[in-house]
Image (tube, rainbow, N blue to C red; front, side, top):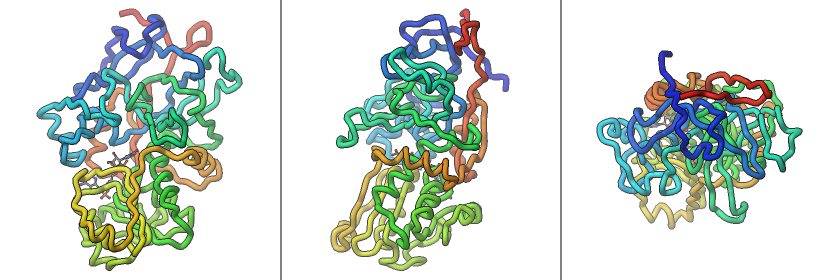
Length: 392
Ligand SMILES: NC(=O)c1ccc[n+]([C@@H]2O[C@H](COP(=O)([O-])OP(=O)(O)OC[C@H]3O[C@@H](n4cnc5c(N)ncnc54)[C@H](OP(=O)(O)O)[C@@H]3O)[C@@H](O)[C@H]2O)c1
């Protein structure tokens, strides 16, 4: 709505070799506020051996893109995402360790979630895949699944906040379902992270699982994924969102302002899945049974928590950090979607160029589920190839 694209196709890393074909993209110029999100026309990515080009059909919004822009991953940042993002509007911080994997490769294109269509394949690739609608596996394991090394699309290299993105062919998964592009665009980051925790936590039928932030992208996926494994879910969520969380299958909902220990009692649950962190952490260990498992892949309220070592060792607790996705995670998700075992939760859809508005509203956390960005439509050139020639 009234946002102008800068049509000067400056040559960043997006296409160092091809100065002709261009695409619209949101280029994040560096650490800072919303003004670092630039609507730009840049070179189309050039495919190298083993890569495919996706036309981005829908790209989900995640906290990680905000965290990376504001440098939240730096150890000097001690507040939650919302507070840090607001403070950031006053003073931008650039920290060498502010990125997901230490230093962020600014300027670059963010966007972790991609529902796309394969429109080109490197010469050595399988051209029969052209035309397939796919999800890109955002968390990639360049040294294999034996190593915990992991790199992320949209964090370590260019992502989906653009009309096109290039991805290794091994990291795209065709998905055959009647979901909309926007619905599929909610899946990779939130559901991949959620399934990874449920999988690593070895959640079994009949086990009790406490899920914090259950109305969020990851939390709402955890609720569904625990239920599909036959677990019992106690969810923690804002009062206004309780009915929606129950409708996802949660067995009980506890108000996020309630005292969880008073509510559940000590030694009550087998597993805690917590992406909220902050001052509630100690209580979460108290409600775990002897030998219980605590898993986390985030800390939206605050990265610094107080750990009472006695709760940890006297109860033989197992604390599991989760970021690198295990090998079965993404194929599992594709099969769950195709088998109708998951429900997507699209809270709101925005045009890509309204990314700043989308992130502002996303940070208010009045929604349940996920926000999605839709890139501008793509012209096809006379050779049937996507992308167009733009003049400065
Ligand atoms: N390591 C990874 O690979 C990875 C991947 C994905 C996400 N994450 C991280 O995991 C966390 C959750 O991600 P998400 O996508 O589920 O986030 P989200 O969609 O923003 O949801 C977070 C939920 O936390 C709850 N919450 C409780 N207190 C809050 C507060 N003070 N401020 C904001 N939210 C509060 C909110 O639910 P109520 O309003 O119902 O309380 C909200 O729905 C984030 O920190 C994210 O960066 C990490």
